[in-house]
Image (cartoon, rainbow, N blue to C red; front, side, top):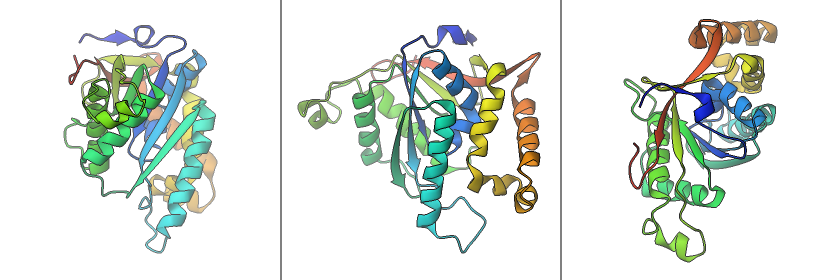
Length: 250
């Protein structure tokens, strides 16, 4: 598929479902795009697959407490961007693997929320070491192409859920993008949303967080986002877009 401009991807009134592995994946990779979609009249929801309970260097951290903190932070970040609905599936952080159970849960959410667009991690990113990222992207992709086919998890359909085919899937954290979203006007909102994930900031900026110097954290985040997204005079987020068919992307 050739390079695509954002005006061809969504329209006012579209429903968007973001399926991420961890609390904060969406803000880091597509926070500007989400903010722009909401501003332009889309309704955005999140599915967070894992509980985020291992995302710390503190060996004494209580996993349950950390998981609840991560959820609280995710809700706060979603509020910044205007995300309207959140689903937490609570699979153990770092232990995600492909399963029919997870695929079934994601298909049920897609059939329930009926998104026009699904956004998820690129499961085919070369050298992606984190299993949660690979598996979240793979299961979300499978769910997207099977949600419209009534004989997949037929009991859902027989209980009243209608099959649903999203129009497009947008893969983020991708190696080969074909869609580039101008987020120049939403750069600061993306930073603000990332800052809500305070428990994660110490993983990247331990000294600044230890000193309570969050303004320096903001400065460093701006540098990172600008370095990764600046294209000429614009800031962009890069996606791999496919249209969705029965069992396939095209």
